Image 1: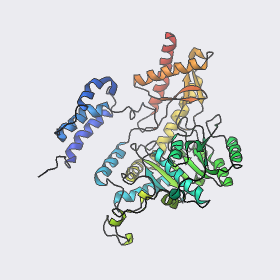
Image 2: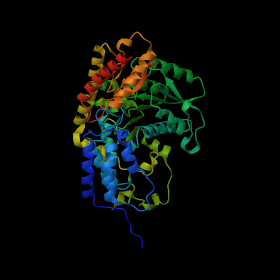
Image 3: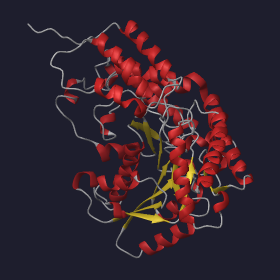
Image 4: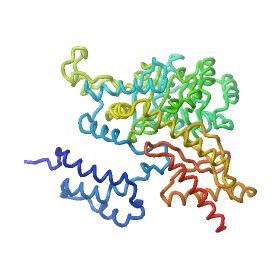
Length: 488
């Protein structure tokens, strides 16, 4: 007779031990994982175990060797990525779902919060009240869902159910040359092809050129192409640029084209009164995405797509009924007396995931903990940090601001005494400065390219990131730049 060897309870005791180790990690006074790799890799690696060591031994190894050698991303000085470490309540809500509602199905409290929290997000970000949303794993899938709805809408206009019979005509999707590459991948997956995405030049602020867009559309209207969608940025990944949404909406309306707004990073910026005007026209979009695992502080794996015509999602992504699934529930959900009498909202037919975790409870917990005001304070703080850093850069002769910040991203570089030298030499210097910043482990931004200039690019985003970290970055760039130029 076989007995289960995995521990399936005693969470009170186990979580106490785990929580202590996680709190120690969040002090961020431990060395980087690469500096101790010779110690932890042999412990965590090794041959496939034939006999298990038991949960106590596994937990001890996790606390001693796994957690202390985790990622630098939750470090408040890490401003490289537009993801961050989860807040405590978000981590707790995620764990709660993993234990109490491991599948997004049924008439449970967790499933109720899927749609309820999406409605809260819709209100927070001033989206069209007619919109409804669906969670997914992040911006990649969120954009895929939004553009999938656009594809369905576009082909239905010419009498084709594209999700049933496939793409039968070439399409055009217009996006700025700084749009996220998930747009191109979504078009590839949807059978439209990466080449269906037409890159439109940007202006001096990194926004899509309205004039260039108009010219491209007029030219394409003379061909046998389906003009499917315009993709606007509500906070580009490179620089945080916000396209002129109102003008994009006018163009989309005039030419009967779907308007998709990628707000994965920047949509929450609308909560900053100083930035609100940039988002004028957002309520006119046909689809909008946002990632709670960015500015809201959720753990990675939570994106959201909102569409004005929810039924399009059903027609775009239905997997059609399966006997083992739909047949397991009552045919009349209005008479449900048990949480398993109905699957609830059929999310599996509205996106690309069947099995999916309960994400809504995480977003609900985040908003419930600090409210709209708390989120607004965080976003205003980070935007103000970017503005102040940009001003300090402009006042420092050794530094060059390469793009005025619109949100919480700053693009600048060290030039020092090299101002009269060639751009490639300055690019190489800043690449060296950046690598030293990362290795020092205090201020860890990323880099990007702005008009052929390699720039240092912090994105202030994490709940733990404060004014101190912007100040530390500014000082470190100057110190390292001075040291490197003295050596040269």
